[in-house]
Image (cartoon, rainbow, N blue to C red; front, side, top):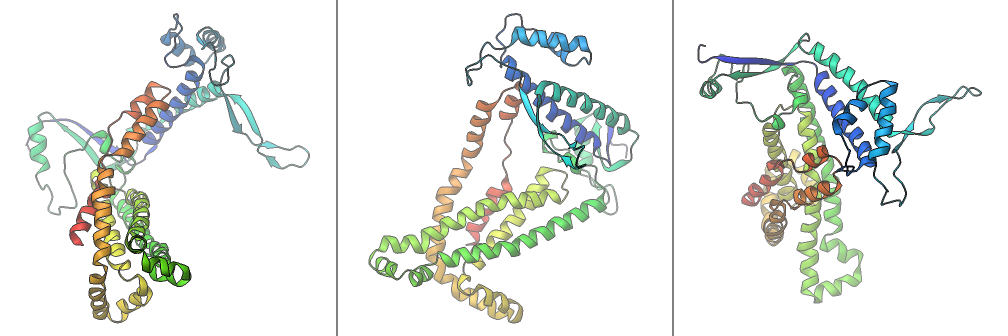
Length: 402
């Protein structure tokens, strides 16, 4: 196209072995660092502590290196374990290893106590071998359907991203690459056919959840309805009749609170279904999450809750008399006006405001920072937080819809 000079092109591989090998090595390395922190502390307060010398001893697979490592750990170890009030020992790990009984010939899985540092070091050596093989096979494997192109000048990249380079727009899509942490790397190299199959599977799972979620919501909304409570508890009828506060609490506040708890659990499940769909960027996944979450809220809060008393007959009417169903819904909605006002006030002016303050992220940050044992754990604790718009924004549209 002669638009600009290309600096580099990297085609995402079809296989995900390199990504999985990197993730596995990072996990094992974190476990090994945690085992060393249990002995040395963080930071290590020994004056003669030399991290480079310890690193060379740990990553060298010889008997002399093992002797040097043990000698260094004894010299630099913490003086006392404050929790157990005794000298610091090498951390132990419980593992289950299969052993065949010589008499019965059956396999058994007994628990064994092994040295955690030796175990994770061996696992790190195996992870390095796996990663090396994945790197060697990286350029020789089959290429995927995505590529990262680096232009010499940023203006050229923005120009190309606005062009349609193929007669069929869906055949070749060009967009500015998101940040590395905003890319769903396990979905980058998947072919278009596999992506469409995963999208259909995720959509089917969402529809199945939509149908199954109606059972507990309708059952619970029926159980906490004022008519049901008065029928099952005759003594409650006089209290409800004479006390306006109890009547408003059971009629409006309690159903809204229970429904809020149910809708808080829902986004977690939907997000898993969205990721199954094979989106390559979290921004696209957020858009799909927003659409599905909004559909759920409208169907359950506007339709199912309004038709709770006769929901099953209403579902039957939807398929037999479609016009009659909507007429019945229009007649029922004005009767729920007070409940909707309470719901909007409780959620829009209360719970939603607390969610926008990101108290969960702040508490998570404080907890992970206090729990961090290694610099890697600390960096993970202070990493930027993604704002999951697919969870927040649907409620704004729902309130406008109501």
